[in-house]
Length: 491
Image (cartoon, rainbow, N blue to C red; front, side):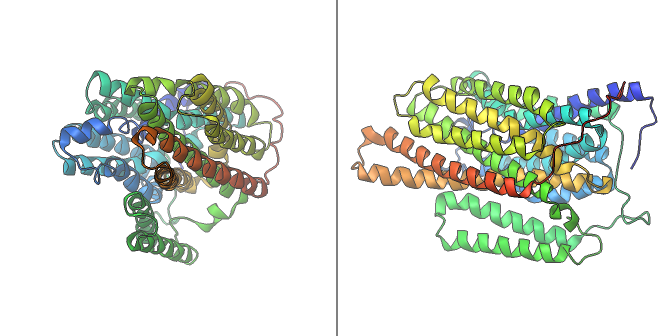
């Protein structure tokens, strides 16, 4: 791995400046997962997209992103993380410009898939650059506190930005906005980042695990695609069952191959670590809760309460502030002092409490008594979970595996977001339909039925989160960090 030869003081300031551009790239990736959501009705009408096809504007991005992440991580390890970071940024900018200029559904869908593909290269390279750049415990805690906050608030920022851009400009700017952000991050990264890469197989050559690539990509595509189809076809349809079963079978075959090949794409040593496995689970659970909340609250505020897109985005700001306070103010100070599960388990419990708060809400509940309280609980919980989870998902990883370790936690994040959103949406839709039928299909009670669906799905989400918290308690047996003898000056 390449190491900078700059003096310690200069290297220290260079690291923090580099973090600005690494964080900017991460914000863009997370933001793009939600920024189009609020613009969806406008672009659907503008491009004449059917109700059955509109979901693909969202899932086209997450499908490509989630299924290609492990491959992107290995490419970053072998070809150079700085190089992969810059290529990912420029490719993402080009795909965003193409999507903004799209004149039909097919071109927009292709652009969204390209965005996801370049994000799958950009995400792991950004996190692995953070991992190899910040190695001193105190600095690492601060850096991952910032990273966790960016990841947790990015979705809410995307909703706010999407509402503002759609209401005051045009839905196309929800895609165009990524172009200047990507270019700024690329210029800063090219000036400040130091190249690092895996040593390959030790003989100066790079070998890719082609069977592993094909199996894991096909398996994740099948699962994410099947989950997306469940929203329209139902979980019991032959198509959905076949896709999910096929995806699981492919992933099991991937696990067998990885244990036998000489140069595995996902080395078993990475996932065998209990703390790392608990970190992956924690990230997935936190994103399930947050994206489920974004979905329910967006529809509750716009459909039930009649909020405009921009007002809906503003309503999420307190959640964003809560994440920043929790991640940047609290988690950053606790990471060097307490065991990871001492933050993650209470954080998951707070997210579950935020979902359970939906049970107190009625169609006429005020913003302060309802959405605000739920959002604050969710934000505080996510801020406690994400920094230590990302930290320990990449902590003490062999430098040659930094990219694939980063890709693995990003995969957990994306797959959990996609699967969780589809699962909770299906539960909510089914409960809404049942409630409406019980009310005699009275249109005047449609809002009540919709809220009932959200409450039911939120209760299921809370049960999943609390069960996951128990698993994390058992898995993450890492003790609290040893206190540092003294701070290192200038580092």
